[in-house]
Image: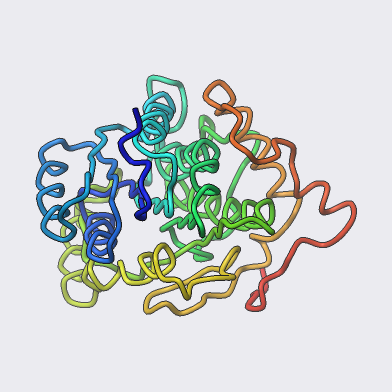
Length: 319
């Protein structure tokens, strides 16, 4: 029996046991949501559940332990969420990592690409029925929202031939840009809004947990963070607003920065051909884990390109 089929709001937060994700989860609970959290550490998950129960007592908050760098684990999360609730008012994707070196999982996929992007794609596809069951479903990608250029190589998405460097993570951030604009167009006319957020420079463990950075960067960067960075609580303000506030409507396809400020959507993130390529490649990669997820599986952006232009937000920047 589903325990979450209730009239109150339900939100899912990935990467919810630390940093921005933790702050988002607590603030959503304070705003009245029942919160489901995904993270790797059971110890931090238990600590967060205590904080959530203090912030919003009387509801069944839940922690799901999973490694989202594995598609099999991501699919299991989707299954557990749908067993918990018929309805999702918000999904806030915060799980991610900074890496300058490619690594490959037991599933044969590049770890950073899966954790930062492909797991989000699979969760979005699997959880869309629950989002559309809500009065106003919100899907929020916490990423870099237009900060990175297009370094996607569709001939080598798993970076087998690629060199180390910042583009190992950068290509996954741009993939989030394409996904946000593509999904927003596909879901136009529904009750689901898809947004992408750059939270700013935030005082989290991003450099401590990063892979492949020179030791001097790992030492100095956290010191600079403490001097100039936002707190996780301040950085959580924008994704929480987009996920929960009744005024955050007609936001689909828009990018945001700190303080709820709109960000320009780069023209490169709107290109139908690139969006269609990524959608098709993602469908192929996650195909074994898909069910009927309530969204057309063909590349909508290709059809758009052959007929009418894709919707362009009012604040579009050049490539």
